[in-house]
Image 1 (cartoon, rainbow over the protein chains, first blue to last red):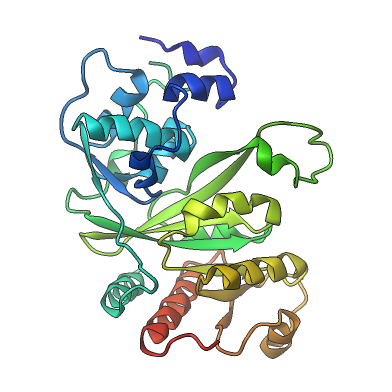
Image 2: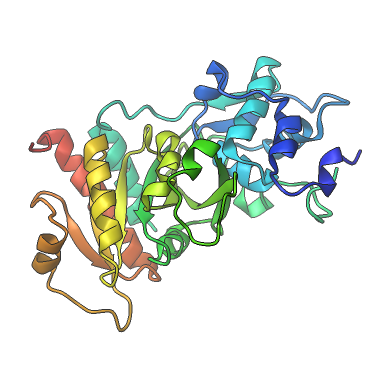
Length: 119
Length: 206
């Protein structure tokens, strides 16, 4: 099940266009941050696009959008298109980042400091 | 499936997996010029080997790109290295290194949204990159600290002299660090966190 992308220059516009179906800038995508954690909710769908399958497999444990992008060697903007598909199908769930409204709250900062102190 | 000559499926090594309980993540951005030590700093505190995420600069951004030798290239890929620190069983901290030059600011939109704050990493031999970065962060309202990476052989200045040179307000923390050293890099992050914490009590002066 080798994809057509292998002979293409990595992340060429043509390759990304095919992988994402030419889509970008949807609202589902905008809700996904680089540090949104993604977790699989099911097994990959048989016959799914290889990139979709790869995401569902690698997200058995939580992974951020940035990590998925790194492991797939795809720009985060392309990954969010694929994730929007998987979210719509219920294949994965997204754990949204803590919204740092204008300023993060003291309790969150104290938790981070506590964690850093243990490094 | 063919993923760049790897026999294994793409994904983290077993030891790099987060626990299932990981429920939320926060991020800090480390920004500075090329070669200033962003990836070194990220790598010295990260629990995983730093990873790279790429973004493609659109046509619109190319007009401001003045890199010699890039002539008329319509696509420019910019890499951002990042690392991870598990804070506790539920909370994860990600650290992103991003270039400070103006032509890479297109990366900043998604990156700074929701970020706790930023570390401006400075090389005393090339202070000029930092001016623009500091101004830009102030404009965006992103709280930040400035960390001077002390390179062997680089000129050392008294901290107050650097503060003046960078036109840095008194309330912005300015610290020295050795980005290669884990505890020194950790202390930079702690300085940022303490500063952010102080802002929750006393709003940033204008």
